[in-house]
Image (tube, rainbow over the protein chains, first blue to last red):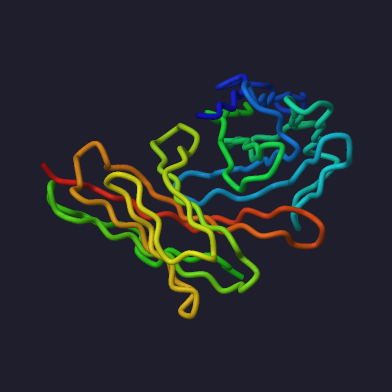
Length: 116
Length: 114
């Protein structure tokens, strides 16, 4: 089946620094990618939707200047957490919707971010 | 406002029996529904989906039923196996405000007892 790869799988950064997480669709072109965040024992929360070549659409309450999303190509989207704080520590997951229709969305493996 | 609800946070089933996971939604614009399985510290894995034009979709041990009038869907796993123990999320999708939305329920933790 379709594969979505996320990197890094875990990262520790110092408070105040920025960290980038990559999301790649390995065997299909993804016109739309999604970024989710999950706190322990809670549901996946949609942060933003990104379409290739255009600005991301952020969900209410998500700071677009803090969570920068770039979808520069049909196979790559990046999430940059800027000026990270300990409360940004979470499990971040990306997913991708394939080109040419079909509503099945495949997820990356997820990235653990710990801000110390 | 929870548009997709999984009211049972957990479910325990004996191996070999049927597991039934339920999901309710409120937005009639949802036209596609998906079930995902998730292990701790991993991304969700797609299981099965159903379009709003159907009321049933079957794939091996997994069957999803959709009742549009009740805005309810369910995932049946039969026979249940210990390896099925995980958190199951239902998700609903639709085109809203010129963008594609995928909204998740809060998940149901399934435990299949040997």
